[in-house]
Image (cartoon, rainbow, N blue to C red):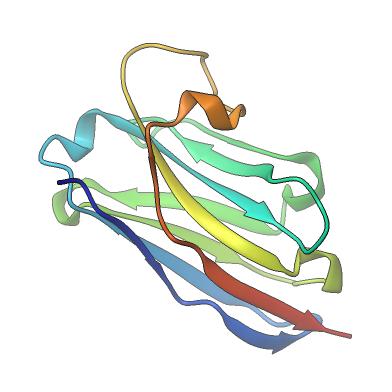
Length: 127
């Protein structure tokens, strides 16, 4: 049974930083592309960032480029999302996702490409 568990969310002020963590109980974790999506109240779920199985390549939505950084630790089956200079519009539930590689798009930005999802962690940024 694969489990994907996020942690690190919370309530912060605009301009602050947070680091989200995601622990995945996937035996072949190093062969999975990982990513983050988010969903704000009343809005559709949207892609945030993705990192290839090797950890070499990453891709971000435009609104977080230069502020968010996705990394992974294949030895510990963990992926991180460092979020700096947070804005109120970053407020959302953040979901960690996993997709077996190779296969799919070069950079997976469509939620349908991911097999495993966590339960989400709330990030609230006050102005």
